[in-house]
Image (cartoon, rainbow, N blue to C red):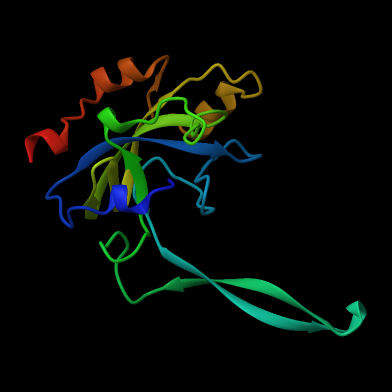
Length: 180
């Protein structure tokens, strides 16, 4: 999700909130986050604040050249999804789902679905970031490379819909920005 400020407006939502997001597919047909590697379960997903630290390493086999490498560190100083950080599980409000433009073709090649966020939740104009999340629905795309039977084997408890409209009808999403 490109614009953190669009997901960082209000710092609290009591209860749960629903939104639309995308996942990539691992080689084992598991849903994974497209920007920070995280393998999703059907329920009880807990996000982590991940930071990458750059350091230099001396490699003798490379003519004494220093190379930058990144260590993945988990930040335990706060719970995920606070206003001052960009961590958490992202999802769009139904009115803010990007259309096909040159800058926001996020759904091409990805798996769409409906997510239910809870715990610490920060709400912005386009969507929200949540500390915890459950997957409520998956939307079967026409991706010819994807074997949906294998996806279903990994997530049999998640309903599969043929369109976003059907999924929203089954899992309504009140527009939080209109009711606030």
